[in-house]
Length: 168
Image (cartoon, rainbow, N blue to C red; front, side):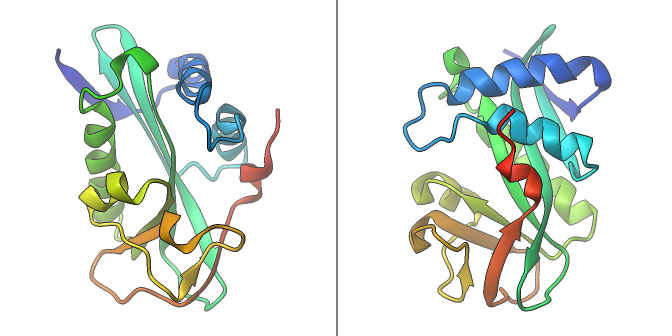
């Protein structure tokens, strides 16, 4: 298995949609709208980073990164997700490769930091952890995590783009 991580291209969009839908189909803590979120981010020009994991001719993973706002006024922060791996390829390190590539790209862009909503055991492996003053309203504190690229972690409420409300 030789996985190549590359930037999304126009011909990948349909495969990304299908992959994202399949990846979240059986997830208990999912809105099952993740594929619509990715498309809405793209359509609104808010998909800052969109990377695909390719094995041969098949797209087996995808990660989206978009800007977030923080009530404190701190800037340069981004939200990672959704991140998707084809169900039959989960547990093979593809998600880890996508995470590392996305975080590296964010650092290359000179961003301040990144937030993520998800399993602390998984995302903690990439330097994410919960911070008491950084809140995603309505979400248990331990599942909303952040990592900074050299600056302090801000305090305030985080808001993802309106695209995260997409339902179709």
